[in-house]
Image 1 (cartoon, each protein chain N blue to C red):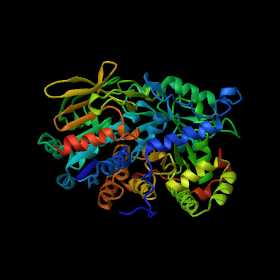
Image 2: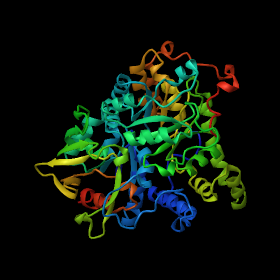
Image 3: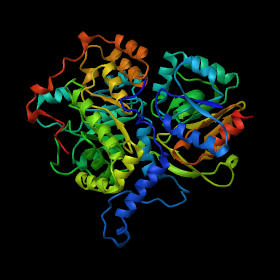
Image 4: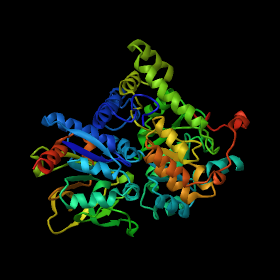
Length: 348
Length: 201
């Protein structure tokens, strides 16, 4: 089965190592002044030519980590039991939260990073990677997660932003970050801040995939449109987005984001997951969709199946038969949400 | 020559890119097939099992009847190259560094014991230049991401490269296993070795 776009946005036309070298060079350009002490650690440390001792947290391992999540499902969990269900179902990682996004909506108030003890407990009970969310701009929550050894940090709009204006400077961390985006400019801004992975924002906790679809289509189409633009128009786009021209140019030439790009926000069924894969996602995050349903075990397994085999309609049917629509989370009509209830507008 | 990549989950396209480059550099007329169904296994001259989550890959391969058949084909001599999670899939014995003994569906075709997450979590992931005598003098950039380690080898399994006392690259007849990711290094030598020495014997 063909993808939504005729170009397969999952294929890189250049090797991973070239993309990494690009990021090092981009950082070097911004960092010419570091030697003079005039630049404050923006961008990765440049590696020596030969590595005779292990170098941890390099760009290659930060951008490499999400590569091995591709075609997989990361599941939101709130405790060890759910994490083990996710692992048994074939999840590629789990995302530990204090409350599932749906419950965050219902509860209101300030949503923060999950309980550190719960995160540690999950880490010592599953073999797959463990991610956790921090509030946008909350450097210290991120430092805490890096220190306890979380595998990836999601700087997430689902939690209440700690900084209304700025995101975390992710270049300063040894641990990779994933960020949400609704459109290409947002995605490239997060990448230029050091994000190793992008996901659509969608509208988390609604069980409604419509916003994720909108964001993924928009990003894909904006990238396609870039390809036909002349260099001076791309330069104007770069200014509009507030990112280096070289990053816009690379994205145009690759025909895809230069980092792994997942779908998230409102995915509730195997068919939803397959839809996002068809649109060109490299994999999916499922939040409330699994553990807010009445058949989490089957649903988790079915979504894994549909994500991996999205291009085989018969297998997607098989996956869809593993769940029951009467057991899906009820979901929220996004049009009924008040503007202040939208999570996706946080941190642009 | 047709090389299959087990394509359920993980770094599939990175291997495809490296294989195509290796084909060009060797002047081999080669093709890459993304394998997900048992019937595709009969069409290939060699198979790569990529990095990803071994639990996910193993469960999906089991579900579609690929695990058993592929295991048999490799035992009968089909050349196979497993990287990271792919190396875990090859091993006859698997442990996790935190959880201990684990039951997970694997191919179990190589006489090695492998420890998952040997070096620790993602923050412990690293890169280093490896000395791999089989590839010549020039060091090979090893990218280790939540990497496993081969801690025991028996029968015909031999180490081709070691790092700090554990094996990171091993071979047993038609099987090659690396705990690092050669597909991320931009260096095609290991893919070329797989093509030339394991497939074109």
